[in-house]
Amino acid sequence: MRLHEASGYLVIKRAGAYLVAMRSLIAVAVLLSVFAPGLGQAQSQVQSAAPSGPRPLGTFQSWTAATHNDGGTKLCYAFARASRSEGVPGRNAQNILLLVTHRPNSRDQVAVRSGYTFGRGAELRLTVGTADLPAYTSQDNAFLRDGRAAVSALRNGREAQARAPGPNGRGTAQDIFPLAGFSAAYEAISHECPSTAAPRR
Image 1 (cartoon, rainbow, N blue to C red):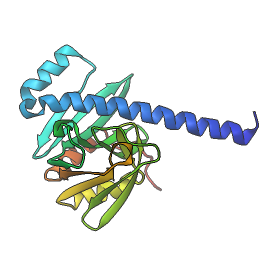
Image 2 (image 1 turned 90 degrees about the vertical axis):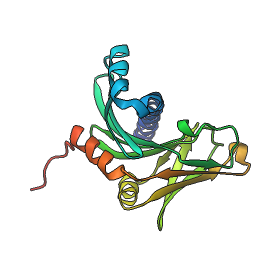
Image 3 (image 1 turned 45 degrees about the horizontal axis):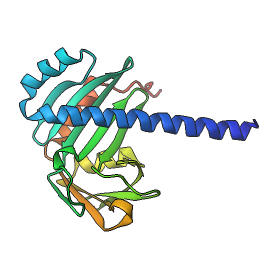
């Protein structure tokens, strides 16, 4: 295998591993979202059921912060459920999520769980105020291309609107996510999973 072919293979392999990890984390967030309204009771229930499972950090208005151990790797994430969903009938708004994740050496990963499977090559756009943020899709998840820009917009916005082609490219799905409490939830996960970047000299 030539060098450029090997490099391309590694990029594809790492991208695939990232998507698998993110889909797993989103599934955990969906599980935790079921308990979010009763967070104090949920914490003992979740931990007793799975010692290495999700551990809530707190609820901050519309947002929930939590941490999760994934194969020995500590992850921190915050999520909110959609307050309104249109365009694709039959979806459960409780399972439509906007998430921000901190992983070791990779921060501000922003994703949307749509509640339906995207068509091949579909692109989701997340709008916050005047910010228009593109995301690529995989199965029923969308991943923001510039997480840092997305977090900056989310910290300064009132609500986020996700728009994407519906199933099989028919119609347009639109989901609205509240941003009340986002900054506090973001600070909670940033404190729990601080940056490991080396300080600048």
